[in-house]
Image (tube, rainbow, N blue to C red):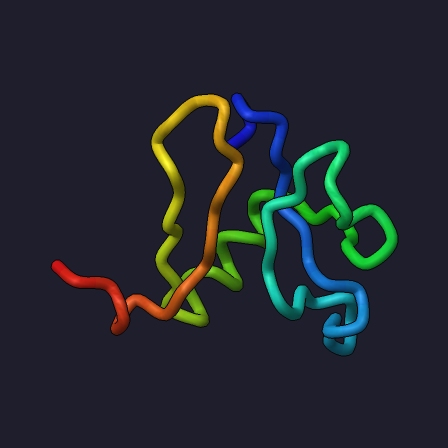
Length: 77
């Protein structure tokens, strides 16, 4: 997602004690996340991503910035 300008973030109001990430997002510059999201490291992002057993869905078109994090159990194999 970095090639599309995205960086890992968490929803500020969902952060847990000790500054642990809450709900994860990919924040893209110029979109509406600047007030509600806080940038986090890729390390913190993937730690939470694995703990929550998430999957990353995205549109493969380079100009599209659609992405969504979902439970792995909801992804067809």
